[in-house]
Amino acid sequence: MEALIAGAGPAGTHLAIRLARSGWRVTLVDPLPEPSRNAYSSGALPLQDANRLRIPDACRSAHWWGWQLLNPAGVEHQWWSDDPLGVVLDFAALRTWLWDEAVRAGVELLAGQRVRLLRLDTDTAAVRIHTNGESSEERVYPHLVDATGARRVLLHQAGLDVDSPADPLLTGEGSEWVLQGNDRTTERWRDRLSFMLGRQWIPHGYGWVFPMQHHQLKVGVCRLAPPAGSRASLNTALKRLLKRCGLDELPVIDRHGGIVSSTVNRREALGSGVLRAVGDSASTANLLGGEGIRHAMDSADVLAQCLLSGATLQDYQLSLNRRFNWRWSLSNRLARKTWWGLNTESGDQRIARLIDGLSGQASAEDLSELLFDYRFERYGLRLLPYLR
Ligand SMILES: Cc1cc2nc3c(=O)[nH]c(=O)nc-3n(C[C@H](O)[C@H](O)[C@H](O)COP(=O)(O)OP(=O)(O)OC[C@H]3O[C@@H](n4cnc5c(N)ncnc54)[C@H](O)[C@@H]3O)c2cc1C
Image 1: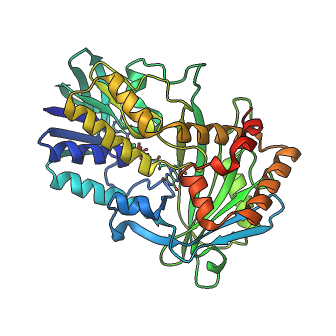
Image 2 (image 1 turned 60 degrees about the horizontal axis):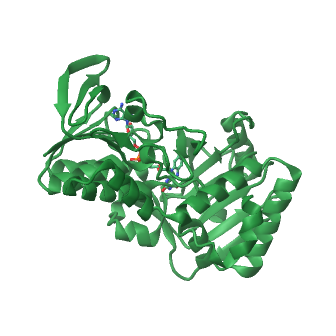
């Protein structure tokens, strides 16, 4: 069997490796000339998922043991565990490792090139692969995968409706800078994930500071605004956050950003004919914490299984919805409610109360369960009015 995968992020590359190891001939294409370019993702991951996905130590920039939330007034709340709870990945190193593994597995990796869909039939797809504006000959494949992330390039080119009124696409935009600190300037941010919540930090979103090795810090802001919400400059909010945190004098060694988007119920078509979407293209990113690396890789496992067993598109869609079940959907509903509402005095008061409540009742492990495992049971019926 043969497949073309457009997009060599975590989803596309993990899928390529799985299929190649099962004996498929796989071509993987990405416009990035090198895997280290545009390392746009903050890379926070629970430790158990990093271990489960066998992400090597070389990709793990730092571990974290605790959570630190700064409320709208800037008051710090902390939760600590005796054991490491997670890692902050070096996203460039993660992509490099995945690309190397793909090549070792026999994948044909075409870097610095992009895929354009020409025709989609029931049993084949015709594409062109472009290099710097020059296009190669037409190629025809029996399987085509859109792993182009939140932009869903091939789904759009196939004319599929990914943003329907019944289950609209929610899009968050993020901007992140990497700062070079030292022993003294990074002390307040080490060993923990820090988040800033409230409209004085950024309306309709949150800020963060994540630790990395060599006293570097990833500092960013993300906004998930309703359709008519604020579109003020993200970088202005980021500079304000840096100043408020006393980090504005540190040298900036990288600037990047991107979008993260998903529907709440994944009702959109995840393909047509021989085209399938995977990872962010298939709405697997979760918007509560703006994270999707482990979900992208898990969805690649689901798709690999479906392709290898000859499952239909409908079967794939069902399998994906079983893997990303009601918990995942509920957390996206919570994300919409939380981030859309966070631009008023009452929104600030609600988030401050939530942080106070968590401070009194929850452990660091509870917070991880809530934000990464979407275990909302203990908050039970109290969530229902919040979701209305
Ligand atoms: C600011 C920010 C911070 C984030 N922080 C975290 C975090 O802390 N933890 C976490 O788990 N997740 C985080 N995420 C989300 C996470 O990065 C994504 O969910 C994950 O990278 C999705 O993987 P993917 O392979 O589906 O897509 P991507 O990683 O987006 O890969 C898509 C690839 O497709 C390529 N491509 C585009 N067009 C074409 C084309 N025409 N042909 C071929 N290839 C093409 C792109 O170059 C890209 O390499 C963050 C996202 C943002 C924006």
